Image 1 (cartoon, rainbow, N blue to C red):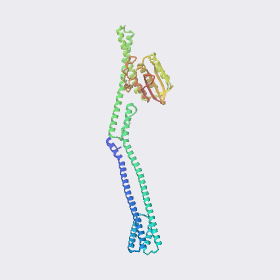
Image 2 (image 1 turned 90 degrees about the vertical axis):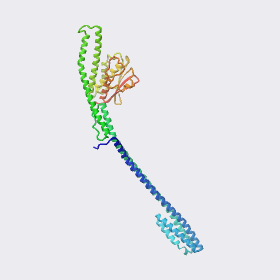
Image 3 (image 1 turned 180 degrees about the vertical axis):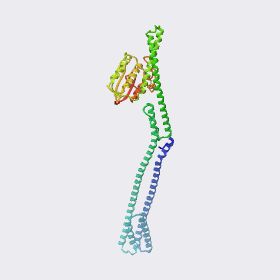
Image 4 (image 1 turned 30 degrees about the vertical axis):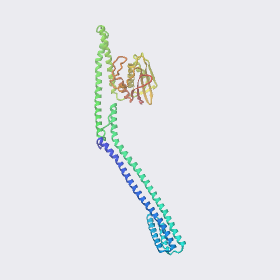
Length: 465
């Protein structure tokens, strides 16, 4: 495997590589532009030359006709010399034009007609002379048409060349820009892949879900260093998690025995087994019994939380939703005897882990009893929504402060509002709800509803057994 350099080197290298096709495109554009300029110069020069030669030929044919007609009238040697000069100038102009054009038939015919016209001194017949001059004029007209055709053809060829060059330029642009974009994507992918790997590691660390992926082989060294630090942090968190689990297990277990002794002692004292107690002693005993009960609740919550941490995979079964809710409410019959509980179940059967779902119900109902307004109803709704099982437990009372919502489901975080039962909470109830929902790939959150002040909503994806 090739080890990539630093993030800066990778960024600069990717930028330089992406510029190479663009530089090649710029060079090709300049080369094509130079070719267009050269071609335009050549074509313009050709057009100017043939037009100038054609103008000289037109002037020469007029001079030839005028001088020969003058000679036919005057029969003067001086006029004959002018006619010869005019014929020579006409021949030179015609030769230059024929060299520029590829019209051998017209040029050959014009050359023969000039040879005939050169014998003008011996021509006595005026009609024959007029015929010779007319034939030369016709050839000049034909040559003029040939010039226009040649110019039109050259313009067409130039336009075709420009179109071909534009097509080539467009194809080259598309290809080189595509290569440049591909290089940019490849360079960015070398950064995106390790960043996605870091995000995956962070999600695994946050949810304690599965093993970390192996270290990246092809990534900037800064990102590899961060990935190594996250692996080290994950191992450290695993160690701390094991320590916490062991501490909870041992602490809860070690507290059970002396707690049982204290409860037994309080029971013996309250029954006057060791003698009659006065009022002050009974008051102290009452306080001791209440503290023992709270301590026993805390130990039970710790044991429940410890068991939850040790449960790796839920056991999904098809359960009767009504029986689960009824069993939970039966356990809280004494606490809710002065309250109305509105139960609405539209999902008669659910696919859940019964133990985890029962813990969710127990803790949410306990929370509603402890923090809901006394004498006000509690609402429990169970229904299906978008292939999800949704449980809503709502109560009336003081609303939860928005700043407290984001820490509400963390362990050992207690609310600031006093409970209705005057018991100091453990701060584990809602954390257990969140962990139970997470084990079943769901979540819990506080939602706003129009029929209650506080509503906890647990969403669990539908799962098969």
